[in-house]
Image (cartoon, rainbow, N blue to C red):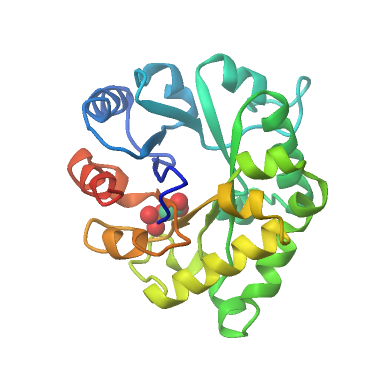
Length: 247
Ligand code: PGA
């Protein structure tokens, strides 16, 4: 971690939990003290059930690339902002793999998020196969390309990137601490293209099997600005330990 950037612990509940779980978790989160920023992404339907108070920020797990219209089941970014979201996750690997979201769609969502006043949490990461074939850097470069080309300097300073190797999500496997730091450093330099104001500001989270027992070592990497946490965010005890590892 780096003193200049406020670190983040973000809980991505995916399609888990029910109303009372969301309510209870949100209430407990609000009582945890930390110098970091705490973000909670409950299932969309419970966004307004999560009364997160001032200290915790609400995130949507996805949002539409369209603003209005005949898109049954979708939520537009301005709708998410209206129910209290400050952040929106875009390009999560589950959305890419299961809902066919390609880089163009992910970038359109990124733009719509900014237009609605939300901060996108842009997820990138290689699959196991791509990793085995030594394609990690090429994949990350491709996934970042549109954002690098088309976002403004201010947007690049504001966006949050989450590096989530697909093979580490929900598997209990993680890259070595050394690999995590090296890849994050690479992403920071790829994304900022020698603009120091961007590289000093953009926050890059690690995601994929972050747990209470590995969070401290991962967050200690100078180029890691916190974590995007799935499974280990589902209970308050375990997520609290991860939040405390930000310090
Ligand atoms: P995990 O999920 O922590 O359960 O590996 C992370 C994510 O998908 O964001």
